[in-house]
Length: 239
Image (cartoon, rainbow, N blue to C red; front, side, top):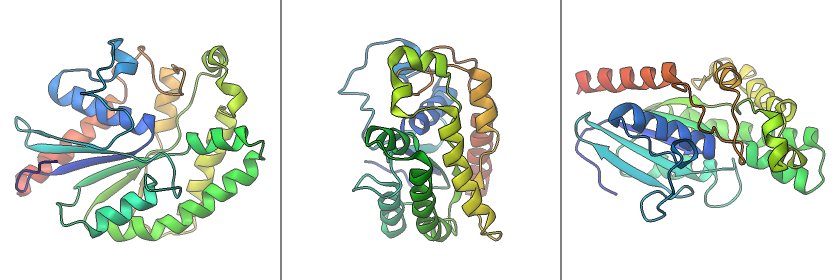
């Protein structure tokens, strides 16, 4: 990975939905849609590795964009907790803005193991609560946005058989409520919960085989990427 001086770093960490936020921001910067789930193009694994960390510098905009594949809060080396610990300890430039979110893999695993989703949501809540101090520590230097689980089109998912794996709007919202309850119990926290994400995804109402957005991307999350662009501009002016 290559980093460039004091260029602001925008980081994304999470599952496929979070990766698509990265791809959409790159689309906003460059005009190039690199997301194979929406552009309909074959994936070149030597260029686009979906489940792998990546960092790119965009000189025309003076910003570095990073992504870390972290589909779980606290399971294994690719967990979000591990990512936060590594970011806090790293000598590399801290992100100016970090967008993080995961949960759908936990929902699926719970269903595959025939566990009760309410029990799994409570486990998820405990894991998020344990991770919150790490987020707060990093937020001393980095603005952190939590991306909640997004609305899915259940009729489309049924065609792929994914509803048998627990991915339903009721279950996803249960996990979102678990996070909100933890944050509500910590009134002085500095984490920004992206409340409009659920409404935005419900408006798009388009879900692919892995609960990601498909081709019907009606300038998706345009308000969000505009906010990110504003953050980059303000940071550049301060540098």
